[in-house]
Amino acid sequence: MVNSTVPYFILSTYINVGSLKYLFFVLIALLYFSIVFVNTSLIVVICVNRSLHEPMYMFLCSLFVNELYGSTGLFPFLLLQILSDVHTVSAPLCFLQIFCLYTYGHVEFCNLAVMSYDRYLAVCYPLHYKSHMTDNKVAMLIALSWLSPFLAIVVLMSLLVPLQLCGNIINKVYCDNYSIVKLACSDTTVNNIYGLIATSLTILCPVSLILYTYMRILKICFSGSKQTRQKAVSTCTPHLASLLNFSFGCFFEILQSRFNMNSVPSMLRIFLSLYFLTCQPVFNPLMYGLTLSKISLTCKKLLCADM
Image (cartoon, rainbow, N blue to C red; front, side):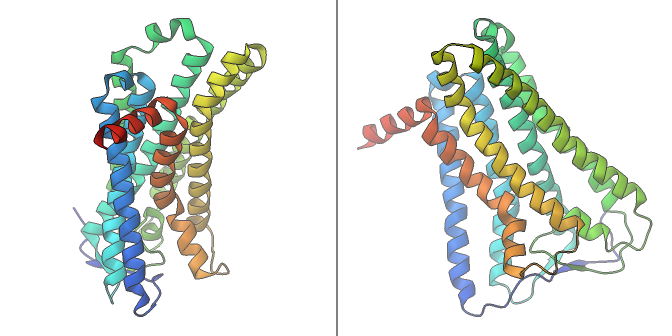
């Protein structure tokens, strides 16, 4: 049940830019449509081409679906706020946005961890890869990478929604959990403990798995043949770049949420808070689409066939 003591929240970080708001609206709308087009195109390419029905591409498909999910949780809301003169959001919509954005972040890390495990098996155990990475296992890993974050955020929301709030001003351009927890009059010890545990597990568990798998991959690369090294580099480079990009964005978001950043210029704060939500959905499809030869060749064939 949504907290009735605060019917709406005020997003105080929006800046009055006058008629420039229409330019920002067009630019962000173009970015959103580009994200939808590129990610949807790659999902369709993977689904309709049987040659891409391999574990690595199925995990990529899950990643692209998550980019669409996260973008839809932010961009339509952002576009409405840019055109509005009063930057308010109803409590139910605010809580819904928190649920969408937090599940997006959790699923992203889980997807990246599953993909690193897949690369580990492909590089370190190439002869047994197909027996280890069966269709059932692929389906199970994808399901786990989505279900476990959703369950974790359901618990988070069940602790957040009943809080009695003493204010309604959020110092961001979108809703987030910790900003609302800071507005609470009631005791938030459980929220803070669960938030820290959930954040730590969400980041530490996937990153630990990724570090372990890449240490093993590097070991194989240094002791293996030139062909093995080339295969490892070609498939692992986009994954590592995606992980570093997303981790960079999450680091600044956590830093900004937990510490006083008033000394940082407001435009820079807005950019940093939006970085992991806006750059990752653009970065991933471009990185994987351009660097993975099978996807790029399939896209070129489709374009040539249309011409």
